[in-house]
Image 1 (cartoon, helix red, strand yellow):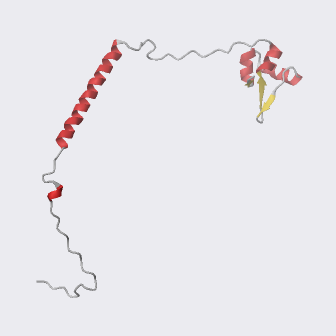
Image 2 (cartoon, one colour):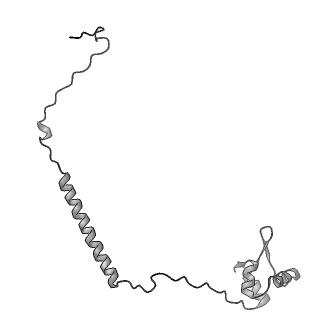
Length: 133
């Protein structure tokens, strides 16, 4: 079964902290140490010593902002239609940009003549004195 702190045991049984510690000291309620200075109690021990446990109060659910919104309402349909129209417009603009940016080559690359660049002379063949003409 589950283990509980002293405070949780108080809430489950409706007994005071003092009563729980007194029953642990006398031996009516067995417990285990948790860390240096804490104790924990098992659910079955609480039931054995005190009978049926009190129901734990569940916190109220938080209210959501759109709790009454139903999927498929007119508002959602309008938003989805607008989203589709915007996506179509973006696709059209992208296509227009592709057409504007397309620049065909003026001359096919296979007809260009390449002129070989002269290779530089090695350092031992270079002239020491440069002539200016």
